[in-house]
Length: 543
Ligand code: TEU
Image (cartoon, rainbow, N blue to C red):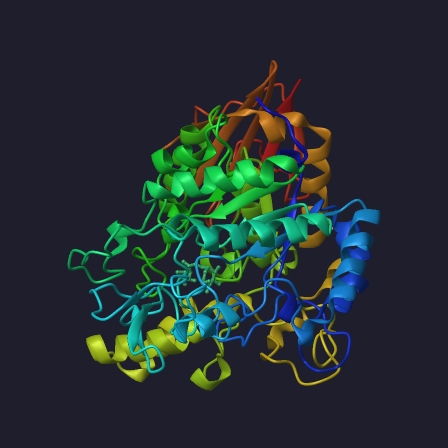
């Protein structure tokens, strides 16, 4: 198996708007991140991923880029970025940027030139006189009318995010140039936004009628993509010591293996989303009750499916997903369940991704008023679902509170002061009132905190290669409350036990850990070896 720093590392995702403000404008920024490097070091992470920091009109919080080679003013300057790269590197931390190249902003000069029909840029986007029937990820039609060009353009996300035409070699060269630019500035890799939808079927045919994402069979993992990614690897990525992680929506194991095959290395790892459906049908906007089995089955499927052939990402949260402790854990056992969830996911095979605030058990925003949510998807979905299904405002607000992306975007909770130590000004999105009890400062005073537990996990991953590279095998597959698995590596063995219940659980056969050393647990003591307490997690090890 190929051993590399990005397989052995732990990634920390920063959502820059919400991490740390340094100038009181209510918006996080690069100097703010710089000031928190000691915190990142203390936590022990080795790679930082920044959600987009480029100039953007912020229709979708930076995922609509208007200049790929500069920094959004609110976040600082290119000098600040260079400083951040250098300082992170000095601290032994690598840095990965978000690469959003399925679409640009409609305020990007390319789109403006394309709308003018400037011959150089005319084919940079998909222009049509007649729209097809595709629908957008954010709800509604995937086409918008442009007055200037007197044509429709394709946008799989918001109207202000026109899709780039990857058929055009000039577009692909532009993208290569962007990658080179940042790699030459010292960047160590990219998180590639919705990368598996960049290739669209020739002629953009109508899609099969369906409720969600109509037309998707014409762009999800379209075969042309392998040419595009192969070209990018060959022309740019192969020349640097860097890695890529693809955000691959609606991906299955066979397609993932197509991207991860070692001889092609189109991508180094992918984000899959199957386990994110543990409490919803297909999309977050159709919630259902959480069942642990719906978390275990897909995670095991991915562990088994990629073993020896690819590499998994291990995550429970990101800036698009509500907080994991609110979804899969418990309020009554907040600390225990947050630690248990971390144990369950980060002892599997793959590269861990921690989303800011997860390491202190931050919870969903849970705001009652629609006006307190800023996210474009939230507002679009609210309107669409009310119109389509005549859902009441009350019903929709219940869903918003569960599903909104802003649940995970509230400012980082550093301390108990008024704005949680995030800003001295007015935060762009409300701070969660629970910051008085859930915050970094509080965690730092408690040797038994969630934060301290994350530090332990990260330290263990560094000390025990079995955690990184060991094979995975699930135990008690169909158990509905116990998630148990074994890892094996060069004669060593690891057994992980996680109780997903507010009740105690008695272990029966099939989870043998006799003669093994207890490496980690979220409870101070065990009354009975074979009884797990509520949300208890244990990790056993044998040389
Ligand atoms: O997300 C892609 C994506 O599929 C999400 O839009 C997802 O459908 C949605 O969040 C579910 O609630 C990426 C980025 O992570 C996201 O923040 C961007 O809005 C999107 O791409 C467009 O760039």
